[in-house]
Structures are given as C-alpha cells and as structure tokens.
Image 1: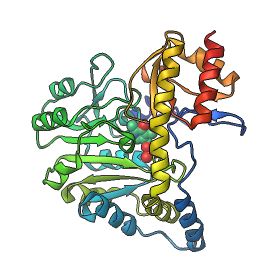
Image 2: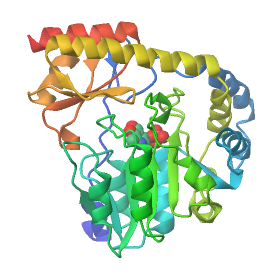
Image 3: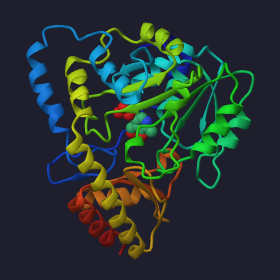
Image 4: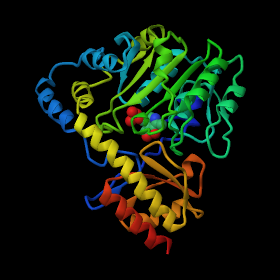
Length: 357
Ligand SMILES: Cc1ncc(COP(=O)(O)O)c(C=O)c1O
C-alpha cells in the first residue's frame, strides 16, 4: 500500500502493546489485572441463555444494562453510555468532542489508550509531569490552557495503583474551566479500600456538565474477554456520544452477561476479599525479598525491581509466570504484577525468589 493514502498521524501511532497471553494452561498470567477466579458464574449463565438469540441484533441502546447501572449509581439511564470495553468509550469521547489541534492532557506515564485516542483524532498532547512517580493534580491543573479540551486521569492510576483523594479531586475540579472535559477512568474502583477515595459520581448527580466517569466489567467482574465498559456523565454529554457510537457496539452476550454480573454478590465479595488477602501476602513477601513497591488501591502492585524489567520478564516466563514489565510505560526498572489467587501469588513469589537469586 502506498504510504500516501495514509493519514499522517496514523503513521506516527505505535500499536497498543497488551500483556502477553499464556500459550499453555500451566502458565500463570499476572500481567493484565484480570480476575483470578475467571468470569462471574451468574454472567456465564446469562450468556448461555442469551446465546439462543444471537440471530437478532442487540438492543442498540443497551437499555436493560443501562437501567441496572442507573439504579446502582442513583443516576438517570440517560446519564449512562455502554461501550465495547471502556476503551471504546475513550474513543467515542474523542470522536464526539475533540477537534484537531485541541489539547489533551494526561499524566506522562499512565494507561496508553489516552495517548492513542488523542493521536487518532489529531489532538495536541500535553503530557503533565508526575511528582515522585505519582499523578499530580496540581501539575495537571497548571497545564490547562485555553485550548485544552479533554483531561484523562486514571484513579486508581495504572501502573502505580495509587489514588488521589476526595478533597484533592474536589479542589481540582474547581480549577477546570467549563469547556474542558474531565474524564476520570475508574477501571479499578471496586478494589479500593481507602475511605478517601473520591465519590466522583456525586458531581454528576449534582449537575456537573464537564465530567465523565469511566468504569469497566473487565477487572472486578472478571469479564475482560466479553468487552463491556460504561461512562457516567450529564445527559448533555451522553446524548451526542450515543449518536457517535457504532449502533451495536455492545453485543447481546455482553449486555446480558454484564447485567447479570452486577448481581453476582457472592462472586464480587470473594473477589474483593481475595484481593485484600493477596495484597497483604504480597507486601510481606516483597518485603522479605527486599523489593520496594507502592501500596496499592487496586488489583496490581507496582514493584521497583532495580534491574532491567524486560530481562526479568523473560526470566519469569522461564518460570511460567507472565508479569508486566513497565518499560512501555516509561519505567525501565519496574514491573506490575496482578494480584492473583493464593496459589498464584505463592508461585509468583517463589519464581521471583529463584530468578532474583
Ligand atoms: C486504567 C485503565 N483503564 C481502562 C482499561 C481498559 O478497560 P476495558 O477492558 O474496559 O477497555 C484498563 C485496562 O487495562 C486500564 O488499566
């Protein structure tokens, strides 16, 4: 294909690098913050039943799922949009609101899809500096200009797992002009233990017009392969996004599975408690290994390995464990490990003990 037919910005885009998937059953993947218990059983049952209707197009508006989410979050269903993963919603946001050369701000080292969608829609990227490897809302606020259209921030952050607090967020929001959209990506919200974690959705309930909250079924609900995420915002923001999204972006199986997973309280409690216990075990074990790490509010831990992360990744593959080297995030000597079930966590630690010597 001649290069001439390609938009210039597309030439400059680097393909997304996912966590490596296992090729055999005996390999443990702790690279993409997936649920170690598999999918929610209630979701699986609903998917099986829904499979009988696959000859018919899905509900274009994902009505039942949006109604269930509206009830859960005490908002109106017109304040919710469902997507093919929350990634899809990031793209819908950029397609709906971002004009070429308008600015998009996100922290300099974070989840890479913000960068990807900004580039696809020809936004001007203004990466904001971190403070001691953490997101600094002050730095983000001071990067805002007249031309800033969208700010993307993950809370908990990926890859550090850390959070900003309610007070920090409320102060930050006051500094953002009305014409700048704030997108808070809460992909890991359900794992948070801290009492200081912001209730961002209350601002939507209170009528805030430039705030979008993103959540996903990929992590806590164990449905990464199903692809369902959602956004919560004012009706004024959601209505145009509903026009821009592809008509059937959430499949029948995805709509049925996600709605059922919301009610799978036993599975959700087991997932939460496992994460709390796994965190404690991994902190103690990493302490014994003499490795420093960040205290996490998520289902993964950022570990400072003080050696080449890519080389360590390969050594751990040799032990049948897949972790995420953070080189592509800009941390060449750090890794991110997902919190697995008790057995997986033990195997991870014994593999690390072996390869670290
Ligand atoms: C911060 C963050 N946001 C969003 C996503 C993607 O979520 P989804 O599977 O809903 O597209 C991820 C996945 O790793 C993530 O880490």
